[in-house]
Length: 107
Image (tube, rainbow, N blue to C red; front, side):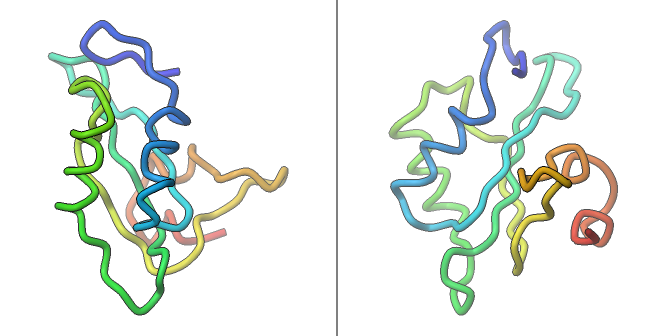
């Protein structure tokens, strides 16, 4: 759970809104510190169709249509390959939320 603007949000709630759009493959939402709001919500996503670019404007439009304003991600970071997994096979959010993109892509 993350807390932003006084609201508790599950990362899964944010990720599920992106699924029907079929614009991203794997996705991971997480909270990062942003003092006035508590947490900002960035999303890291693999591109659904590897030959296409991730259209962040369309993704933000989808979020604004289907989410309250406090849940809309602060931004999207596309990566060209599958997201890293932890030993249990789940997306490694901890690794994604720290370090540079090169660190995020290491398994």
